[in-house]
Amino acid sequence: MAARLIGEICGGEASEVVTAGEFPAVDREIALRPERVHTLGGVEVARERQAAILRDLGFAVEEAEETFTVTVPRWRGDVEGEACLVEEIMRVHGYDTIPLTPLPRQSDLPEPVLTLTQRRESRARRALAWRGLDEAVTFSFISSDLAEAFGGVDMGLRLVNPISSDLDVMRPSVLPGLAAAAARNADRGFADVALFEVGPQYADTSPEGQSLVAAGLRAGRAQSAHWEMRPRPLDAFDAKADALAVLLALGAPTENLQVDSAAPPAWYHPGRCGALRLGPKVLGQFGELHPRVLKALGLRGPAVAFEVFLETLPEPKAKDGSLRPAPLLSPFQPLRRDFAFVVEESVTAEKLLRAAKGADKTLVADVELFDLYAGENLGPGKKSLAITVTLQPTDKTLTDEEIAAVSQKIVAKVEKATGGALRA
Image (cartoon, rainbow, N blue to C red):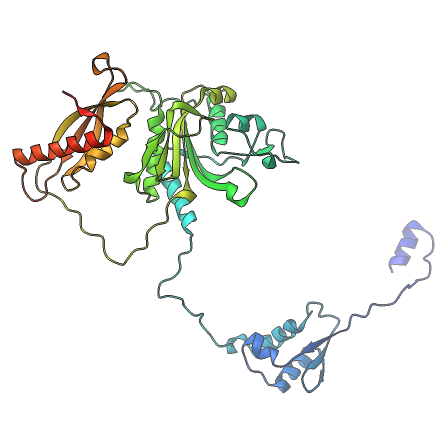
């Protein structure tokens, strides 16, 4: 029909049909062990029943003592092995005959779905979002010039075939992407930004060189202009508050952290940065970005940033099953006493605060620094630190003699720890 129609329309004559080659041999033989129906399917099926099911489905079955030789029909290209034959037998025999066998339980309580690292990531994101920062998702690749502004990268982290000329190295820190995003926002008229990201950064090509970091950056003003308040510029303490909020949300012992000025100078402003330590481990770092970095990005300062290293946080302590004790609420009025100490300029305020708080752990509820003074009347290399100590009695109202005794303990503890003296 097709040849006649083509001839009527196009002309010409059809040639003879030429057949070349032979049809491929599609018949396949598969060895089936009858016991595999039980070991794979979980149900005992008689040998005769297995052979009958396969024959009804179009398979040719030759029965032997230990195995069946099954010839697969041409139209069953989906049957490739012994497991396929077991599936065919089980399908006809009935899946509802397979007994329900629950998996053994290791404990009465289900295992948590999320790992500790995944839970920490979620908590860090939630804590930073509550502080008003917007989450950003930036590339793990940055330009070589931007990487040099943040301390440079290992040669092994340079890409041989980058997707773009300005994305040719792996980022040594999460901050470059956030800083570049802040600069783009400033170019478009949005100078006041607060961004954060939780993601990896890379120190070298080894598996240990990759670390998970929660980083954030604020640029512009601390708060927008309002007729009730004057806008103030950002400082390192804004970044420190963000870092401490993340650590507190992750369950880190923030009351035991030490603060020093050992943050990396490559991208932080010297003297306006710090590191949060727990013993020898650095849990986080914060501070103002270096003017050189701001110039390289074209970002008008000030800009402050922080980094919290999620994988260096201590593991949570195993719970012993006991309930948390009820909070002790004292019915007695707290009282406050102010102290001023003259110490060396090298003495940190944190060291003084820790000494005062440890003078009497049952009565001293809080210690705050409220004044720093340095003048000629104190002498060269000296400064004055003034603190407020809150005393909270729990069982009775303190007498004047008891208050004086606690005050003497605070003074003695601070003088011993800092080498200073009570200011007259």
